[in-house]
Image (cartoon, rainbow over all chains, first blue to last red; front, side):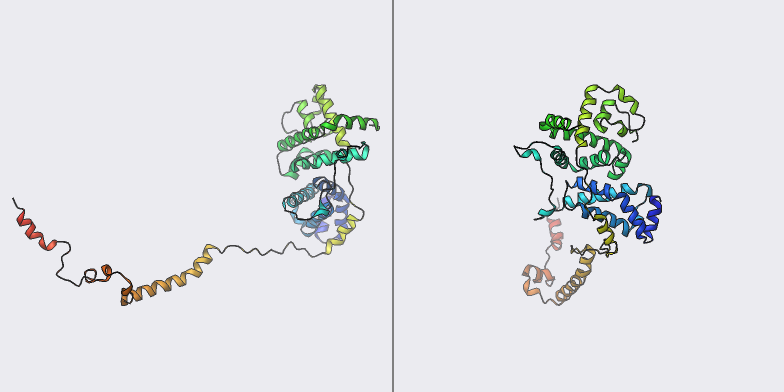
Length: 187
Length: 151
């Protein structure tokens, strides 16, 4: 069934139809939120809020063909809203990503390389992190990403180029080791 | 991907990386014109990005979402935010006392009940105009003045 059919059924209170929407898009929305929050502990809660908003008011989705993009927009806006609210003593939801090379005796294996890259992505400005997640990791087209971000395609391209450049600069001290290590590990 | 505007192959590499599946439609053929150094750099960034984590939602996460579908929504609750009273409200509450104060002032002024509190320059005979012979303006001496100064 198409997204439009599922959405119509869900609007009538059909749990099974909504469950199918969840099956289709929960993981990509979760991954986006996880990257936006830097692996934050509230990724599940934010992801669920986006879906609950859809369940409670499906009429908000004006372009049914872009349902995935709508969910991603709601979720990413929720991440940005939360990041701007002051937090006091909320240690459980602090980013969990750490730089493995901060330990002087660390040797870089695959999982640590992944954590290092994750940590550097988490340090990017939020719009750069968002565009990188959408286009690179979730495979959205530049137009789909522009719709999610409510920006122009030119702005998306500019942010994407800056994100890649910033990432390279932030990883430059470990760049050779990182690439060499990954090559040795069977790349 | 859709083509946004004319981009050089090197720019496309910097934006979308070396994987041409990410390039806008109609630009892939231009990749052959890209500088080798730009290709190498874009490829290395892609390889690093490929090793980022691919997180999965925690076990039972979707089931927990479906369990929440029957929760009452708090979206319709409008939070009370005390704020400043509007200008209209201020005028509505201030008009009656101001009008009463004005009426009382006019009444007391007409009775002269407040004259004791005022300077004699205001309340004295000159101010009240009781001295009919007083000619403060000198108009009564106009004839004398005119006759004395005829040349």
